[in-house]
Length: 393
Image 1 (cartoon, rainbow, N blue to C red):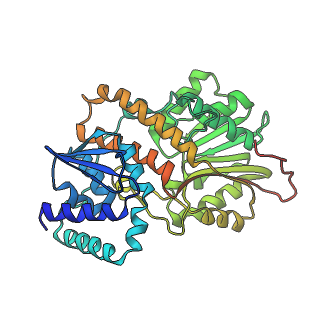
Image 2: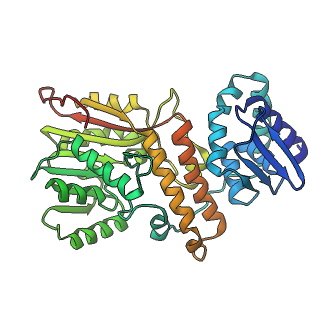
Image 3: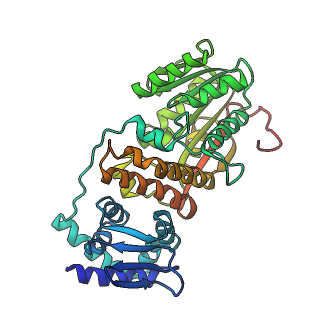
C-alpha cells in the first residue's frame, strides 16, 4: 500500500473514532480530523510513511515515529496528543466496528509479513544522569502522593513515604523489610521519621552500592541495612513488610513465591503493603512501546490476581487504594523536569534516545488520566484478630 493510500485509511479511521479533533500539517497542506472544534494537538508530519507505521503498529509505530523525527507538534504537546487518542477509546471502537477492524487487521498482517519496521530491540546504557534528570533527589522511581496539584517532586515522594509508613502503623524499634528497595529512599525515611530498624533488598548491585553509601552519609548504619539479594532468599522475620514498584517486574509464574515469601517472613501480628502498577480491566494488555523500549517483560497485574494470592497465603486484606491520578501528578512532574534538563543530556545521548524517553513519560501522563491502568496500594495483615483502624490514614 502506498503512503497516500495508507494516509487515506488512517484519516478515515480517525474520522470514525476520534471524540476530539487532531490537526495534521504536511508542508503547506493542513487538515483537521475528527469532530468540529479546535484541535487539542497539531502534528507536523515530516515523513508521510508515518501514517502506515501507526496503522501497522499502533502506539509502537507512533512512538518510533517520534523517535525517528517523523513528526513534531506545532501546537499542543505529546501528552495532549496521546490523551486525545486514549480518551477516544480507539481500540474499543475498532473492535466494535467489524469493517474498521478488518481493514486495520489486514494492513497490520501485510506489514508484519513483509517485515517492514520490524521491531528490533534497542539497547542503551542508561546512566544515573538520565534518572537524575527527572527524578527527585532520592531517585525514587515510583508513584508519589499529591496533597495539592502544585506539589513538587520532593513533596510527592516524601508524602508517599509518609503515607506508606502510617498505613503500616510503624512504631519505634519495629523491624521493616522493603522488597525491591531501589536506592533506599523508603527505608531511610522510615528509620529517620518512625524509628524502625529497616532492611532493604535489591537485585541491583548499583542500587545497593548507592543505598549503602547513603546510609553511611546519614549515619544510620545501626538502623538501616541494604543488601544485594533475591527476595526468595529472605529468612528473617519482620514486623512489617513493604514492596513498592517491585511486583510489576516479577514474572507471573513467580507470584506464588513472592507472596509466600512475604507470608513466611511476616510476624504473626505483622502488616504488609504492596504498591504496584496494575490493570483495571478484564484483560491485561501491555503497551508495545513501553515493553520494547522501557520495561521489557514487565507486567501490570490485575487486582484480582493479587488479592487471590493474598487469600491463598492467608493474609487478610485491610485496605485497597487506587492511586492512579497521583501517578498522573508524579509523571507530569517527571516530564516537566526531564524537558527542563534535556539540553544537558545531549552530549551523552543521541536525539532518538531523548525523544524516546520524552515519549515514554508523555505516555505515563496520558495513561494516568485516560487509560484503564491503575496504581494500587494493597494493605494486609497476618491475623484476623488484629484491630482495623476506623479510617484510612
